[in-house]
Image (cartoon, rainbow, N blue to C red; front, top):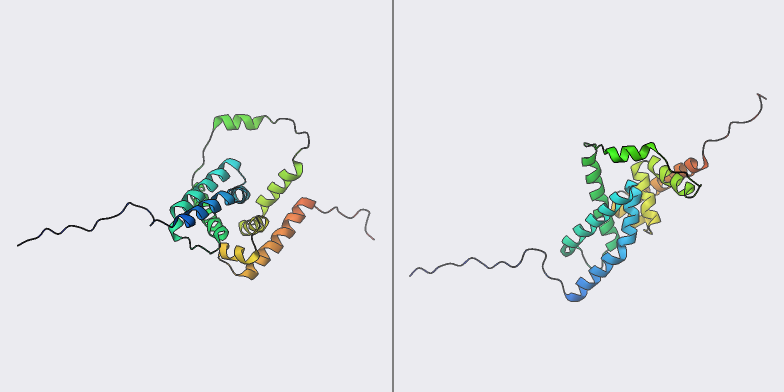
Amino acid sequence: MNQAVTPPQRGPAGPPPRPPAEADSFRADLVAIVPSLRAFARGLCGNRDLADDLAQEALAKAWAARASFQPGSNFRAWIFRILRNHFYTVASVSKRFTSYDPEVAERLLTTPPNQGGGILLADLQRGLQTLAPEQREALLLLESGMQWADIADVTGVPLGTVKSRITRGRAALRAYMDGPEEPPSGGRP
């Protein structure tokens, strides 16, 4: 007598369900990290709209991969690494494309008067963009409240390399903010 073999039943797509306490904790961690994530993304790309998109995508990816997160491990480093990897993927792809928006070009031809507000912040943002990407990234992670060892974990480099990048980045940023050195006055001695 032939019996029909039924295939095993599959559950809904997605990660296996977590206990409610873990899911609530994960959700609370996601909500709490949003401002820091946005600030880090803004520092990486220098563009508020793109930074918001990067942070939102990192949050979505983290939510989709929540089953792979080990409770008790460093959540902050985990999600910052997701954002960092996504940023470098987007940057790699965007190098190959350029877009022209006539409205943006037209707005760039006229500049509203500047009353001096935000000059230092604008200088700092420009200074950050002059740093090597590795130095800028390390400084931004440090300023977001991460410890040096966590930065090494996020970037995947040794702790000594992180210290070097931060020290050199700070020095370069300080030199940029201080401006060029004044030439010595007077003639030859």
